[in-house]
Image 1 (tube, rainbow over the protein chains, first blue to last red):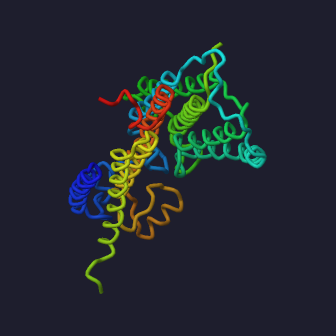
Image 2 (tube, rainbow over the protein chains, first blue to last red):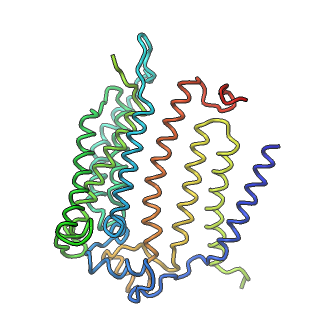
Image 3 (cartoon, each protein chain N blue to C red):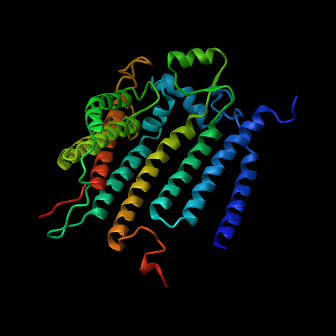
Length: 239
Length: 128
């Protein structure tokens, strides 16, 4: 009975969504000529190469035009990591066994992860350093680094990331982001204004504060995701 | 010459699969009994919405909005850049989706520890 009702409801929702989206033509050019700046997308496409010398327009939007939004996003991630820690915090009772898997990982996983781990870290660093030139950026690079750490956590039971280190990395990255924003406010007019020389487009050192902010975001996201994984995988010991 | 052109097929296919993902996720949230599966359903809804966003920003004959040498070459060859705004918004949405999933999973772990089960039909305190 419930199933029939649910399927009926889903059919209604699907029909209404489908009819409303069928009026939007797929692949229609709604931007127009970027030079005319008729809408937001055209504005970003037209201004980014000259104003900021950043090749990747999405990075320019995320870090510069909507940089304040990204600051909020990073703090949401921070809140999620902190909330996770406080929700899962529990004291283990005396004589209670930890909930970890006691069987060691296979030889294949252990030696394979040792081989791949440095390469994953380098790839992550590459992705967030080149965030303003190629697809990718701080969030993606941070996630890649966190997957490398997850691999090591799964392969070696005694692989441990110290929470102190994670907290320090996270705090320094966050402080860098906010202080760059405030410096922009002091030297220019708005928070996160680009005050450094922008350089040539498609150079690694170009775009003013954008690469610095994205590297900070990369470190922050990597530390936060590693903290989340650590909290989910381990059991706090408080003796 | 068929009456349905290429564009119509693409729009039905892509919008249809995005809406289909949303509906599948909603079905999992409403019907599944295991809490982990409900969280997976929420993630599937997320994926559908992201697909819908990016699909709306697509432009026919478009390239990625990156002014790399290759991208400029393709622009000179008559391609246009797709809308960058939905892609930037989806980047934000993916990160928020990660946060939601992480907190939801931690609540599931908490419930499992308390009730020794993660199936909502077996949690006694939910019955009335």
